[in-house]
Length: 99
Image (tube, rainbow, N blue to C red):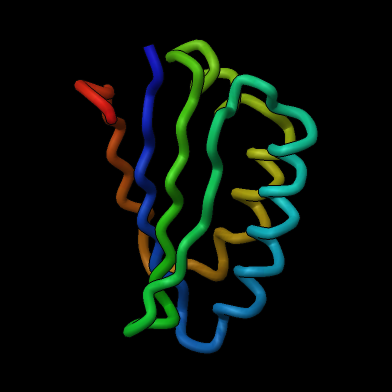
């Protein structure tokens, strides 16, 4: 059963460009190396340039677990840690129904 993750991240003022660059590199790596990550999209709030939201869909819980243990996820965390203005808000959701 697919697992969806919504991760809301707030970056420090003036750090959005640096965060976006690191995030784009991470997305490219996930696309290339994680076939069980079905969707991995970053959004930026149009009213607050310091707020970003990831929309992620994983094939199953094992895929989500594997994603969290990758070297590139650890490296990404190291790159963005000093750019964030607080801890990310993460919601893990199970799909109920779809069109």
